[in-house]
Image (tube, rainbow, N blue to C red):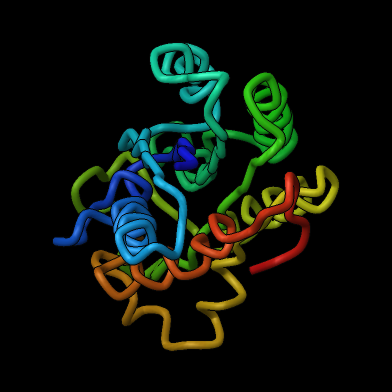
Length: 218
């Protein structure tokens, strides 16, 4: 029996807010479990390492500890990064964005460098569109706001890195803007159950590839 580990690093969206089925990472686990049970896939352990509020800088502080606690060099390893939404937020008190695109790109580069110590099978998940009318500012935290143009800019950074580094890229933005994407959002920022399902469908293609590196869009 082939065994593989999938590590999903992310923020509250990766964590699964607000999906009664646990979010897109949990749905990935369900896809993999169903494939294994039916004899169509490998035994897969999927680790949800999403932490609400996390930025790329926050992930840098914990990625090596998270991996060290779970990594087995004898097991096929896949790493998925879903980051950028919190880096895109606007601080209404300080009247500035949390992270500049150049710094975000540098932090992403450092994350990828660490990830490559463990595997060459790495994917990145793009950002989803937001409903700015509902999150400028956030009703539950008026010191934070999200602007569609800034989220789109950070998504373009993620897409650029994926292309330059020859990584699998789950393009959520372009897929959603072709739809009534506001119907896929729970609160203007986080996906609802339908949104999480769509993200899982895009990312699941990464789990079915047999190549060490899968380039291009999904």
